[in-house]
Length: 160
Length: 286
Image 1 (tube, rainbow over the protein chains, first blue to last red):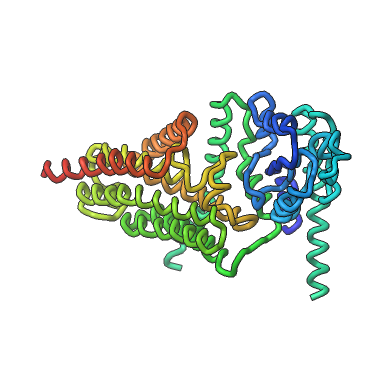
Image 2 (cartoon, each protein chain N blue to C red):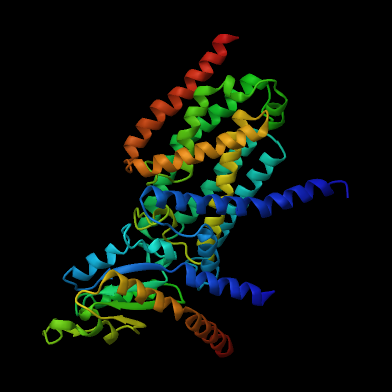
């Protein structure tokens, strides 16, 4: 019985990833492409993907642009508010590696400098299809993360 | 086991209502998507969302938050069961208010300003629609001489013959209660955003799942209340309730969100105005 329940939850997880989109330091190119996914042409709601504004309801954090010293606190704050299991998708060249701003004195680099990134979507800017593909790939990792979440919770119980 | 049939009916209601409500919500999302020229999510999408939320990490901000969510759910179930057993309509309305009030208190029990403003707006919405619901019960009392829902079914005419304007006012209530545009400013549904997520901002995981389930119960309850206007036979009422649900989806898609001042003006002027006119007419006719 418990197993069937786990299967339903695991299947539902893959069918309803809610994303929260954070513009870290982007030139807005990637943001426009990310929002283009919501339009009737691409319609991400087909896959159950909903763009929520609230990190507490979200499953996937979609970040565009590179991290700098000013926004690193906000980025970490949003990431910490997302309940487990959660995934991070870095969209665009800047989010993946820092892009053309990599050597700037104020830029820390790609998102992976501060957060554990699950999927890199390269391109300047990536096409909406590539972004949807990246989110779907991140969703594929959710089960693994849920198992890890359970494990760490058990460890906590042992430590207590 | 004197009450065995009643208990079985209550259990069937508790299990069937969220399934019906969830399917209707899925249909709503599908229809909304089609109206916006999109493909839209699968019909079972609300259930996927619900089960996904059950599997999320449980975050509670304070010790009492879950109690309020459970109150919200349990009082909504209680109101629905009262409707199924054709009990006192006045009591049903009070219990429904109490259910909604639990969510308001739950949203104000945390420190987030978004949640608190959402709760205040929910109170404004309640101020707008509660008089209309109360006038509906008064109107039904004036026609059937009883607050019992049973008496509606025993009355020889459907309620709509005596309460046409009250029914129109009730459509406003339905828009507010279902959190549809133009009156969705305490919180909104689907992908829409308002005040981050308004009254539900600070609820996540299991709590949000329970709130979603309560919305399904509420949907079934409200459609049931609409079908009361046309009961006799009941299936006509149910068909009209579904038609008015479709009307709500159309209204949701063609209208923009209003401010709370506008909502108070619109609902008090047209909603309460229509309901009051109807009741004065009922008095004058006697």
